[in-house]
Length: 588
Image 1 (cartoon, rainbow, N blue to C red):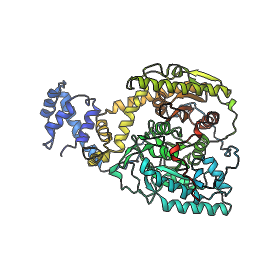
Image 2: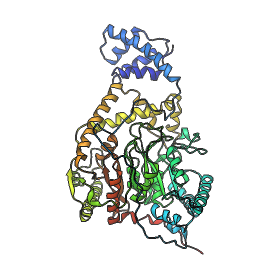
Image 3: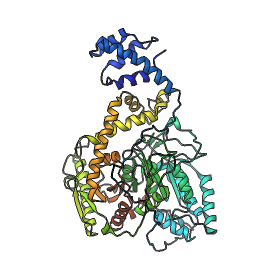
Image 4: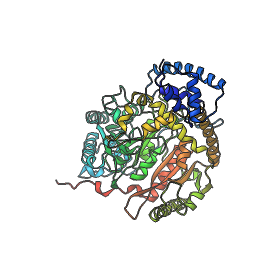
């Protein structure tokens, strides 16, 4: 039987030989033969300058033959990207307890929003405000849908944030939402609101491209669980939005998605389209995803408000898999309460994503602020702007000036919270190497999820001199095939240590305030803690937004959003929008 390179290298990686020349040398010697001989194993060992006893060589030879047969059988299974392994990641540690009672949704009291003569002037209203206009039947869902579709089409040539318009579906949904409301069937605060989906969510009848050329024409047979739930809530899907190819960055097969505040730069990623469309006032809200910063980074760049829920809060059924143990779906909105309302519509088990917990999200906009215990990373705030900013960050005077400016914004956030009466408890993040485990885990799981892409050779469509937007994923997937199983499991052991350290940090607090930049992003994505990212200032140099991050206890999004909303209302940064995308003048 001819040797399969992936099977062959995978076996040697399991022996811990992936860091040597041995696998490549042995493959080169055996490539044109039907079987591997002991002489080949010994010759490869000499070329790689490693020592093997005859007994070791014989044992490896027998193991290689057996391993090849097992791997060949696995190759016939026909895995799909989203088929999960039997093992599950659970961020909940022994002894943790969570409320189990579901309580009614309690939204904020707002004055009846005005309806301008030019409907486009509501484009930047919050979802909460737009929902009131629809509920009171002062604006129809159809009118909102047509207005937002027109804005998407007007600004997409500049910002490149749409992959597929779902116009027919949207118009039908909007008309149905209006009919339901006229008949007294009100589905809740998202009823009739137009939204956009990151194009890793499956929508029946439309392509689901994952932002990558090999999947440009992919059609999936059913709607993602999150899409189904927003349909049930009465929301109207108007477009599938860009993501960096296979959820990396802001570069997709159609170009680079742009930042509405500064269209000369990318919107960051990978939830590039959701953040850009929301910040540009082209949807009421959007759904993004995060594996390691994909809600946080574009929300920061575009000045949106992003909520990364607890791992295991929202079902990912029908969503592209990058990492079974890191992927999370969450809303990107213009206001914190909008995020809470969207989360309320999409959370909870669906019976198919086995990682999701049955823990209620009881949003109460009127929860007293004094009931929330708040910590802050005192050292991070004190040292921000004065240090080097990390080993890979620029050390130019301009870079240091940017860090110093960010530090001032972050210090003002702390001052604003104290003016609100919040007592801040100093905290320190765990130290050590445990957080570095995340790269090993994500790369191994991503390479597994896209093994068919690698084996088929279609990964070459994402790279090469003829591709104007080459991706680094194909190379990363190949590298991951050399990762020993032992290293993957040890990385997960280190992950558990980090989870225990973070549980100790949160023992006496509900929310942790932290600069958005820094180690918290890696740590909390590894442990599964929720994060709320919102604007906290605008740079003097170019007017682009900056952000602050609030972290919550596991499944503690209620208090996280209450504190975030209180800060947001006091600071007011969420009310500013990129002026280039203001409503065009009414010519009537």
